[in-house]
Image 1 (cartoon, helix red, strand yellow):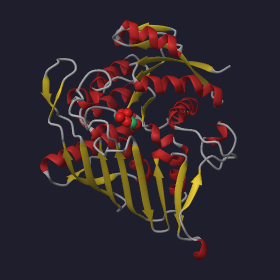
Image 2 (image 1 turned 120 degrees about the vertical axis):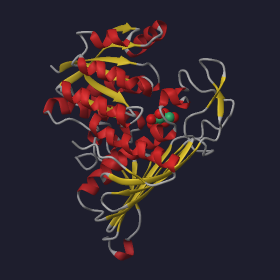
Image 3 (image 1 turned 90 degrees about the vertical axis):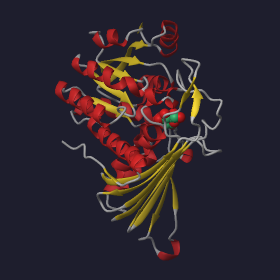
Image 4 (image 1 turned 30 degrees about the horizontal axis):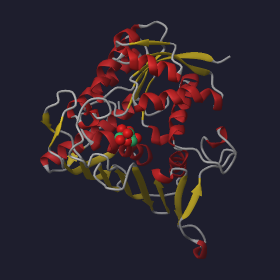
Length: 384
Ligand code: SOE
């Protein structure tokens, strides 16, 4: 019998659904010592919490997160609320001795993130941040290829995350779904929301960054605020591009926008090494493009690896269907829960931990500061 891990979920939006789906599926596909039990869900609106609980199978509801955090029948708190609430909830949950799974980005900025890291490390509670793209099998395969030394010295890292959903000036800011446009709730725009994903993957695949230089733009300067009904200045970055130097000597470019007409969630990266290159595209997420200069000359060229094989060749895939049948976005969350539970069983915590995610926060801080000062900024280290 698996040991129950009683989950208390806070927030019933898009991420509340993605995480709940992962908790429900993980034990059907992975053999683990722990099994999530959907104990309680919390939302300010009781009607929303009740409807969510019914749909996803939570046993009970709360309308005050403090009550959920204080409950003795909760082992792990999952924070799926807007960014400006992460720190307060996580700090209280750590004090109450709960494990914490926190939606990305960790915090509004680096200093807030430091306090969160201190809280979980002082309380010695397992902690993780939901940077789910690390667990797309093709991305995990990229990590394996790099660790096997197949790329050799890395020269370039290139990443983009392009969307187009905020082009209309009629779109309001604030409130459910649109808090990402409200700087007081989100902290920043595409930098903390989208580039944070690119940065997390990059730090994981290519190590720490040394310095950055950035530019940002806010194309629509004011929008109606959903909560007040009044037109208010827009404080987020709508688009951001930055150059970076990694500590391993490689050069990088990163770009993100919500104004790339035609692109919905085009997250791509490419890494060029001395011996090989790899490229990945979220719109074709089960494929990894790979070029190996050591291939025989007449056959040398980019290969498109369909990352769906079993028998240990392709990460996570033997847990799913049969070779050749692909999986998708939602499965990256299932894999992240599986790794978290595995980490509890082995005592080797699954990343990114709060401390790992603090490094992403430091890069975001440096990027936003550079955009303001128009000067290169050093990136702080989050290492102990
Ligand atoms: C924004 O549109 C968003 O939903 C992000 O908040 C997610 O983190 C990203 O994975 C997809 O886009």
